Length: 81
View (cartoon, rainbow, N blue to C red):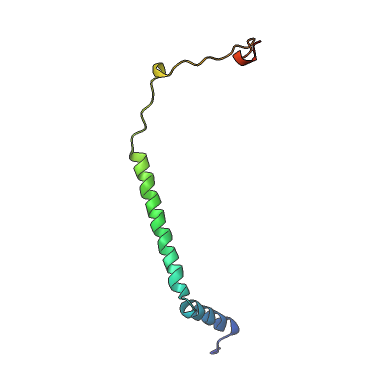
């Protein structure tokens, strides 16, 4: 009952490998995590700013020039001969 099984040793080895592994794996993981949090906060701030901004001005319908469209029985002008 007092000994460590193979599973205990595997967990200990995995934790040691993550903490003291080459190239500072733990620091790079935590750095990536921090960048993700900063990006999330920035996205939330941008979303709030977009919601608070007034909608863009709309053009009045009378200011839009009328368009010429062909009726159902009429051919376009470039097809008339």
